[in-house]
Length: 168
Image (cartoon, rainbow, N blue to C red; front, side):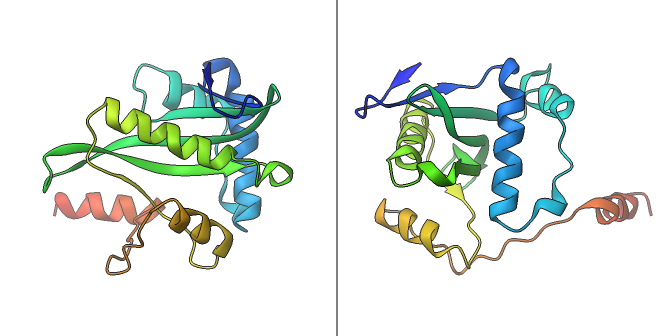
């Protein structure tokens, strides 16, 4: 358990017995982002991909007054230009009723500690362009928008079609 300056906030790495909490945060985040219909994750899938033999991501859980308050899910990427690992923050979420108490800042700050400990060259994440409160929060923390970059994604059948191109 990592204590923060605010004695009401603690942060710890999630354990396998917290997959229910993680999934509930994922669903709450999806609802906030108006993407609930895209969530197909299950507790079993989270156990396998976060705590199984091949761990694809890590999760920090923030608690406020000993109650789950938010989470940050991240994984490593790599910068060829820096020749260093980086951290990609996939999700950052704080329960609506607990926003403004320093929980999100504590999660991001601790991610900074992890990045330094692991000799990472950067921390990156994406934010929906309509999410003004989050954008203002990130800018206040010193983040800069990478407006010259556009995210591309391949999913579902498009992944299969892409893989099929290899065998043609």
